[in-house]
Image 1: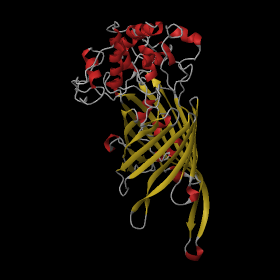
Image 2 (image 1 turned 90 degrees about the vertical axis):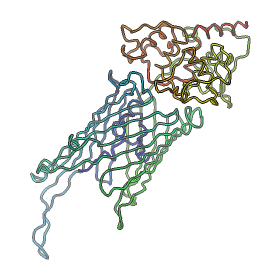
Image 3 (image 1 turned 90 degrees about the horizontal axis):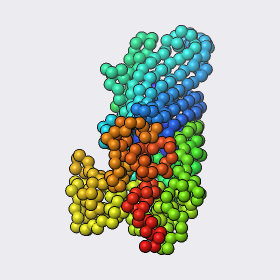
Length: 533
């Protein structure tokens, strides 16, 4: 039995050396690490076609979308070879003759049923930074045509995949994938129909990560360009098969254009032992308003004629701009008087004129509540961490902090800059720690968490339970529904409109400035700033 899933993963991961365990955030996650489906809340579609080794035709189609129980998906993968001649040998020696009988077609298919969610859905709010995913797979393989002898060569089987993705920091996702993990006794096997011969389907374990080297939420900040490094280590239980590595780079010089390259190691037989081929890969991707086109070049072995070209077309979802930068809408959404302030407002080089959150950012920066970076940028789209949010809240209230202040959390050290702010924020009960005694100061804040924190900060009344859904994508039973309902009624999330809330999306610095500008404490300070008092 041949597992065609080794190649049918989509042109995007193929162009990056098949290094995908850190999470493909589109429908190709169905065929790689299903936990990656939770990284994208939108409708996702992917398709791929290509011809391997000039003979094997590949076809892949996958669709996933949000549902009340999490992200669900379905995928189909097929490889086929047509018109294979069937011949027979008669006679021997000088009288031997080969005669043609018929043609047959070979096919191999896999159907995927996928599910993914954040662990917080299962553990009632805990585990927002961990995504879980699973696949149930049905295999069908055999020959069609060419007489009854070939038609007997048909088999079916089933197996399953498990995946986890840990969002360790704003710039690093760590992944684990167990492909074909279903035990033999639970049905993880392939059966040939002719003689009930059973073949095992060997499990493959992958560990690795996706590391953002350049970008807005990366090791090195850049406003418009992105560079990601992907690394996978693959271990299989198949006999005489060595462990291999997969490496990939994805560079976005423009918002719509990606350049990719990678190294895909594959086992090969040598005269002495089983070795590996270091296959070079490359690719190009285009993303326009959520519609994607990806091309991948993949080398197979040392023969240049074995190099294969793959093409994928898909849709990954597109979010419209949150606001139109026009004065009329600004007056309607932000209840701040449009007058020329007496003090000179602090501004930043990465805030274009008319940016939807320009005024709140400039007001809070001038008041000293939120600052920028040494390179004169504000980085409005960068995700906010819990330590940073604690500092902003304390500064907004005007509380004085003592450098020697200590926070009673296991992971908050006395020398950390945010320690005194976390101590005050915890004492004031704006923010709390976790049951394990940690505060997790470098963990990014989700919108659901932000709703609860800003509700506490503003003293909003939160009902014990809500009677109806606050947003279409937030269930009444969601742990943050009361806080989301209270903050929405207060107008804090007015910038999101009436559609999705995105409870698991990370709060950006621009969003934090917008929300803070509507809290009673900060609103009053802005009025005083504008009036010159």
